Image (cartoon, rainbow, N blue to C red; front, side, top):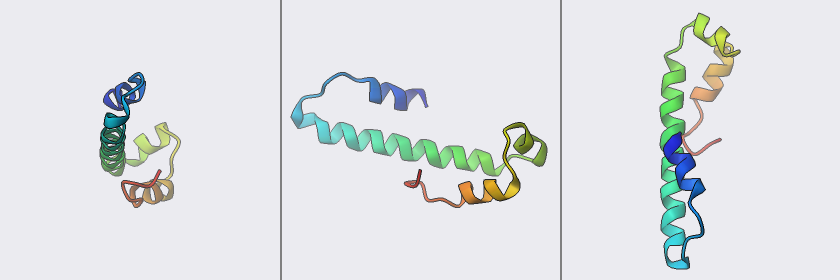
Length: 69
């Protein structure tokens, strides 16, 4: 997540680099979502209760595509 925040925190970018920077940010965000959902899928019932999620909420989140928020 720190890498994503670092990309967002970058100051103004010249026009020629703006598209490339936006693509990198999108890729980093998609990777983070995919990884987070993989980890979420491995949590047991106790760990889910600790973070306030049910099995059905986990199922919904884990079945989203990486580009879906």
